[in-house]
Length: 235
Image (cartoon, rainbow, N blue to C red; front, side, top):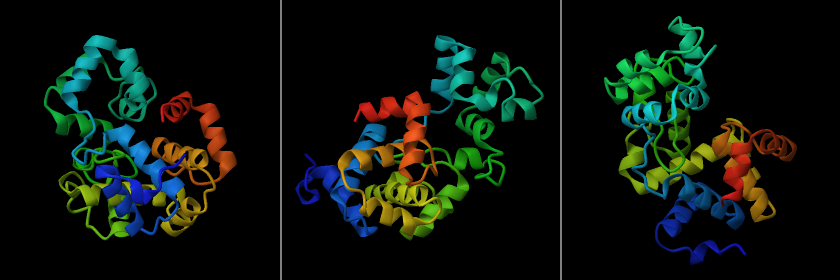
């Protein structure tokens, strides 16, 4: 049974209130967003993507194959590997040398050069932040316009203010579900008929940015991506 939004307390209640300010009225959608965000970040606005230190430890504990699996841009044929001239994947010693320089070097290696990042250093400046780990300059800019906060020039606003973090998560989902049309995303969320459908739409778009609202497309994504299915079962 879905909890009425007016009965939500604490961080969940505050998050629900921020979502309502964006025009969300459907309790199924609101609870799905809150539940998914809680699993992703514990509703901690200061939640940030893991950086150089944890990934250096991961190389040691799980090996280069795991790194290539989780960061395929570094593996054989990957975008970064090709750019650096390593067709078989960026070697361990190169990763260790670069990541030992700290988070700016790590995130620049992993994310600089993506379509969403247009300037050198954007990978670090616009690394994953907030309730659903928003990533990329263009994504920050578009979400900022939706919620009325200049996130492109102040990305840390997400980590410094709970309400901004809440609205940013909501804005991200409006944009993703609407496939860059937040009004369409808002309509889709407000029209969802049950909690499971709302949850599937939200989990799918957090896991696969821009997945949209089409039921058949969402079902196909879950059928073809075991990680999405695991995330859904965990809710």
